[in-house]
Length: 540
Ligand code: TEU
Figure 1 (cartoon, rainbow, N blue to C red):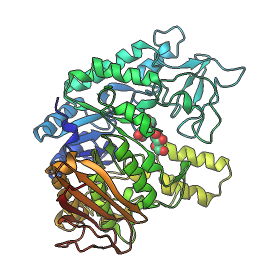
Figure 2: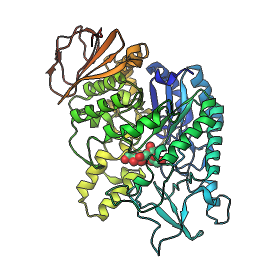
Figure 3: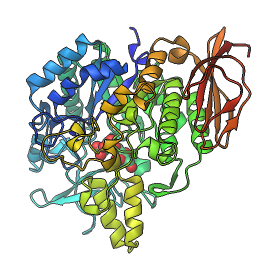
């Protein structure tokens, strides 16, 4: 079967924040349909939709109460079918978010499961208390502990995320069969695969106490267990192998070794992964405590993963992470330059590149000034915890400002008008004031804009076999400099990146293919945040 997912550039849509058409302040499917030509023009070949299923929105759709229906905020199933049909006409493959570690507590299965006699009881992980205490000492991803007592049941249930996201029990074969049916439902509708949410924690090896840690006590009992590998192979064998589709796993706390096993084609588990190590290089143990970003560490980690894994999903942004131009670039002094440089880096690596909505125009972190503008459950929990721990108010705010997930969730900036053209109503989350300068409409008219550059770079990649499938070789990494090559037996492309706000030098030969600045040839000098692509013969 042809691995088309290796040849295309992917784009993530966070539907709530993409484009509203009915004025309820929440993006919708018709909004996505409206913007399909924009995505085609950008050069996108795969669209990943964050969850659009029915959900009480405790975690913006990552808490699903019905896997087979569309949330009315987003539209109808007929509109979903229309979206799939129109995307197919444009040769854009659509993948859905498959959130199966947990459901919403409002899902029918969980409601039934609260009755100890119900056939659904074993769909979730219920345990009695331990001498008046919770069943074990684990802590959750959302800065709380992860057992909730249910009066009706007289027992606790496990939730690795919020208490409205109870974990499914993957020791129960019926749960796996249900998931297979859900996957078939969507694949038969014409979706081309899934982004599998926190897929490497679905199977819990044991419910023993975990070694005490600052975060995620208990993780050694559920991160990438053998049971997860077995389930992934079963899903491939019974479902995925019967469709022309692919999976990308969101895999937390993976190492190159575990990532290799999860994505090794001969094992038949996932087709590629989102790993986190590069995203953690500016964090001290947890993302909430940031240290100074250094490009050297960032690039070293990228190079390590490029070499360790044959094929990965590459990304610098998503709906959980701050904006890359604010975080890895310089959104004050070299906004356009550093955004374009990050574009070259992302699109020159080996693997499938994923662009997150707004990244292609250099959207920045939010410009909020207070906590009442924040909507994200994780940020709200962390702020509450930090208050309990007596962190000073200014520091608490700094944590949210630098790491909060709402940074990436502000509405897409389509134009300089009211609410950035996102909605005619009141947006569910505040629009960034800089939409007057940073928006699609302005950049579409400007051949030197970030958006124009993205188009050029995506097109370049789409038609270049070396960038799409050539080998990767790191040549030099130092403070502010990253040089690597993509090669075939005969040819190579050298990618030279000045990852700093100072002019720099790097001697390299080859014909200039592309630069983030206007220039005709390469003389070894690099402007601030400049990135160049040079072509040559592979002599190594
Ligand atoms: O994210 C999993 C995950 O690891 C994040 O919660 C991460 O810990 C945090 O955002 C960054 O510190 C996935 C989804 O992408 C996220 O939006 C969901 O909240 C989460 O799973 C639960 O479904």
